[in-house]
Image (cartoon, rainbow, N blue to C red; front, side, top):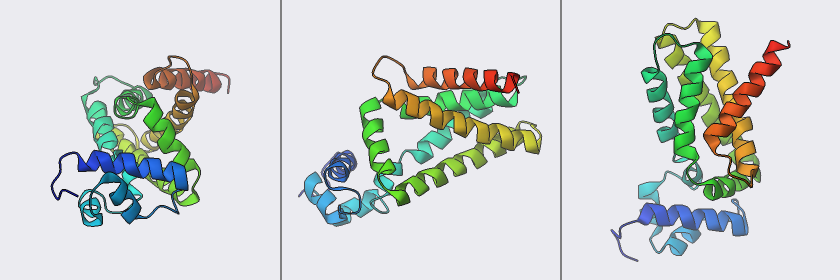
Length: 188
């Protein structure tokens, strides 16, 4: 086990995901992940705070990309157009590897605590988006509603994309979900 072997973080992610799928999240220990990755448990903790964070490490990058897109969107945009731009940026972070996303999603859906953590991460993203909208001059209620709606659209689109066996990409699934939402609200 090389102490500073390159690529340890990637190997740890791959090993953890494989073990979670084989054994289940609860039955997999950090020592198992480290052994499979060819590193020590101490190396694991240099890269991840705990075994859950292997699944959620991209959350910070996703939020950063979404907020940057929100800030960079054209000034005369509606709250939902701004959220749409943020969701497109999120899709660029998440939607590059459907198979990885499917595996990650399967592990999360099989464990109540991980589902809860996923919801907490999404709630945090929603709050950050709402704050970003307020900074752009969007009314408090509209900002909160647009951000929460955006997260709901993202979740539905992600499920559709992850289940798709054709060529649907995540950005396209998001646009389709937004269009469906517009149809639903137009008839309300």
